[in-house]
Length: 340
View 1 (cartoon, rainbow, N blue to C red):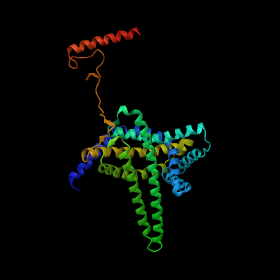
View 2: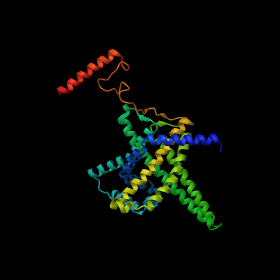
View 3: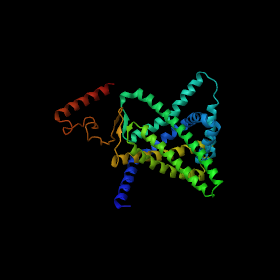
View 4: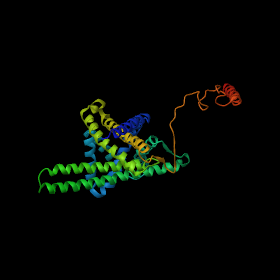
């Protein structure tokens, strides 16, 4: 590998790391983990009902809880299962049910709205203020569409896994046993491709920004690779630690919070990487038609007109006459404040 290429990679990773720290990604991850605790049961309920039509609710829920158990442990998976079942047991239709359904919809979409706000801040864009209520409604429906997209990806994943298992059993009966390892590799690759596609859709459609697909796929590939590695490390840590015994009954919730927090750091790091890469080597990221770009700037108090202390205006900032008028205004405001 040429020396210049290694230097470019090092500069890219260095700038990404600095930008990641500057964006307060740890606080964003904590907020996303908090939202997820309330959003996870309704999200899973929507996914199970949406995909259960094709594979049966029992098969889909079993696969989902198996994946959760493999990731965060049996206790946390059982806690999630109980939460989903308690919501699914609601059968009566009255005012309370309507309130519950609306609340669940807001909770299920809230996690994606929080993720959208975080990605907007990472990419220095935000929606224009005049589109407040319209944007709020559109964000909720976009978040719901993301949940349905995850359900579709789950259908594709289950279908691909079923086909691969059937083909593997067919070939294993007729060929050597090493075909099993090949099929496992194909299964891992297909899972990686689906994960990359999911991250690509998140980066492309969720933020209020315009970004080229080429830049999206580079960032999604890096994020998927980090996610695959991080998932194993997080699973190993959660499997060897005694978090559930330390926190008692709340241990399963703490495990879910930790897993979502660590996962969110990977997503935000991938988003920062996508931003830096597109700015240095790609087509850059621009605000959408209904959004604006913002800048983050620190200004020392007293060095600008905006942050100058009351009564400390100088002619270097405003000019001599403007400074006198500003001082008179300060004295007037002070006397009015003392009168109150």
